Image 1: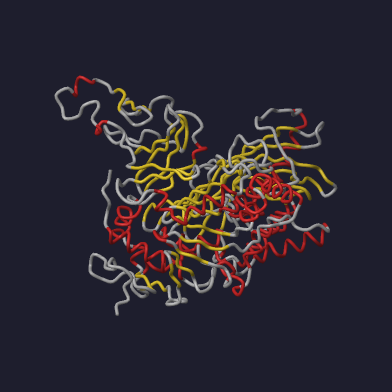
Image 2: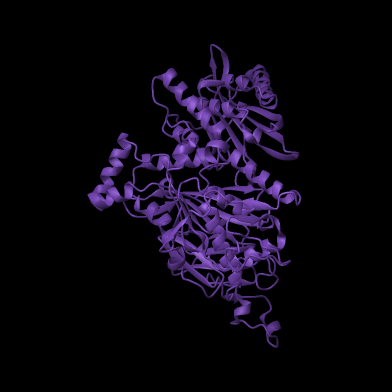
Length: 181
Length: 448
């Protein structure tokens, strides 16, 4: 939703990685992604927000061919302020749809480094996720592709942009998405 | 004096279903009533098909539903628009199963390769000699893709009607035309263009529960308190942390906590055929530089007086019963597609104002992304309440009635328009059911 945040990421996976360096970075990124999914599954919202750079953006495109959220409809597009707004809603005892809270379980896999960031300063990774969500005794299943663009700040590795391409991006959704996928 | 509003008030088992201030729960849950609604309402009124700008060239098509009938809106060779049943007359297979596409110069069935012109006429079929001595011949209507009985459009918005008789589109829309006039007039070029992206969300509730909610000013500050409070807090934090005002779209959320006393001042109106209007509350005349440029463009195109008349309109929702909820000021619409008594598909679309600056489009886009997208902080709570209603009404016989008593007896009707005594009145729900009774009691029209 951030209007002043122009972002784009290569749509095709074009490896620009020095394979010899990929080992430690791969491990670091994998641990990061596991931590991120754990934040969602344990409702550690502060931990979730802390994964993003100050100008970080979370984006679920409406179409897989969209290169950027700029000027286009998005299933979800949030900067940190909108993410904080979502957290505040989820934590409000009068968020009626959170009675009881929904639950999720994520699995992240197939992690690969697309750009090790040596030249660009941005580390780009691709991975696949599966997510099961329980709400009001009903389970639903989602899957898709994550693409993360990281920056390395003094506080550590942070997400500059997370792009989430849902497998069912154009299919009717039963109910809505209450938190991030 | 009877409490019944119209002759149609009895269910097949003889019970009174609709009274002037309350409605029996079976209107929302009963499969037989739902089937009757399809026949008496959805198959005989004008149903929104799509927008002309979705069909750029011959062969372009869009799939949509009228009740349970899959339909195709298609652009013909000469540019004309047709609405066809998406069904091969041979064995009934759907001819297109994508939401949209281009079929070339013919529709071809994937099962036995029957082929049809873009107006539905049979063009070719395998082994034509096999039909020589039969009752089905090329040229017979029964061998063509069935056409909707009537197709008509208003300012680019295309509607189809499966019945040959009944009012024409203009007459049926009546004051509901304001939905499209208000939207299109806001464009300096007087026209809108669809943004070819649709969000589809299934609600686990009866379609009428959604329609009633669109005119329900009482629910907003209660249902949406968590979203409104969160946005209000963020607005403050942005101001504190950055010194800048929060982006204007936060208001779309924070304004939901408008107190009931303010909602009470809103105007609601009901028109013939079930169409309704809810006045605006967000405040649509900001004074930022983009708006200033846009408003000056409008004055240039329309003249001072007319431009001011257009820009000062403040309508939140206009309901085109039973199939559309339109937000003209944000150039969005929601098409309502009933799937079952307890299941409703909502298709959410938005439009660009032709000739308006990009910044004005961005405003509509922000509303679409924030309020109408699948990650909406708003409908998350609406949909759970609708579902709770549906479950509560289905559960048992403990609660037989749905109450529409608020300000009953105070509705003011004159010249075909009913006005509520205040914005919190349940007048629109009562009037929608008055229209419902009329549709249901009139029976089916001649089906083309």
